[in-house]
Amino acid sequence: MKWSIAAIAGLLAPSAFGAAVADKKITYNGYKAYRISTHHDDAVIKAKLAPLSPVTFNLDTSEHLDVAIPPSEVAKFKALGLDATVLHEDLGADIAKEAAFGTYDLTAQAVPSLTWFNTYHAYADHVTFFSDLRAAYPNNSELINAGTSVQGRSLFGIHLWGSGGKGSKPAVYFHGSVHAREWITSKVVEYITYQLLVQYSTDTVVKTILDKYDFYIIPFVNPDGFVYTQTTNRLWRKNRQTRSGSSCVGTDINRNWPYKWELTNGASTNPCDETYKGVAAGDTPENQGLVAFTQSLKNSKGIKLYIDWHSYGQYILLPYGYNCAARAANHARQTTLAQGTAARIKLSYGTTFTYGPSCSTLYATTGSSVDYITDVALAEFAWTIELRPSGSQGTSGFVLPAAQILPSAIEQWEGIKYLLTNA
Ligand code: 0X9
Ligand code: ZN
Image (cartoon, rainbow, N blue to C red; front, side):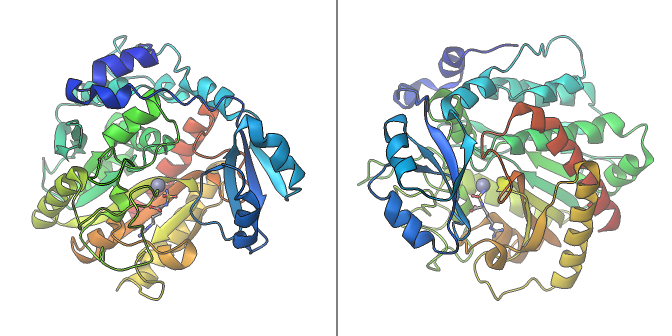
């Protein structure tokens, strides 16, 4: 099904929130995106950029700063003479290319075909994709709902099980698209779901895995943000919650979990910032739903593995985010598995994933899902995976070319099979 942006806005925006989608679409036409080497002095680079109005991509700016420069400032940017490579010659053109979703026809067959993974898709089609999968595999799957977003969308997901029957085994639990602009995450999560169901009856490794675990997969934990990236601003990150006293919109759901939320330095208290943590721990509707759902998994068969899928940078991040010296009780085991998973991922296309504790490898985060799910929900393994492109050799950012969807998905699928066979 081919959707125009206008159709998405009209069909998916609950009427009470019509105003939000009336925001004028930001095209990013003519914006040039660059990766600027900081030579370990990002403050100097940021000071040089201060007279310009760059759109910044990455939060860890110790080695490089990825920015989009408006067309009117490109000449001024070049005159700064910074050590930079081009990530997008024209970000607007690359976004337009990415939004040409193609003509995939979801109604053509009962089980969606692999060509689904050749392009990105509109939110409504992702919803249909999961309900079609469930309908094709009613003996191994059901649709689930982990809560409701600010604008009233379901935090829908799919629950998969094997020969032990529904709900009989420990949980493997995935979250996709907590950050709205990280589109590759929902595609990868979809591919893993798809292969688990499609290959269950023919592949012994897949059968062993699905017979051993119940999977709970929530592809869009921030549906409002995702829709907003399709209607209005491709680079939106947070949810779409308004706060009294501020005209800025959005709380970072990955800074809002009620664990170590109160610590300073791992999130922002400014509603205008990308890592805004909210006024109180767990004060986003998305987080409230996710906490209750996570608790239900903890209280039934427990959580074997949680993965929060993000992009970009090519990292496997282990606990913890809140403190760079803290380590999970089973840290050595987690490290061994991350090393093996990274090695297995690399076998497909040579893609390198760096692994290590989140805070010491990237930066501090407070109120993150992984810390909550490790210490409160007591998952045995809880990771963040930052998908393609690379944080050092990458040639794009959140707008990853559609040609890389399948390779990204295939290498992660290989990694997950390794991980769940060895964990
Ligand atoms: O900052 C984040 O939320 C994640 N990176 S991203 O660039 N996709 O925004 C990293 C979160 C890692 N935190 C923990 N694993 N605790
Ligand atoms: Zn993210």
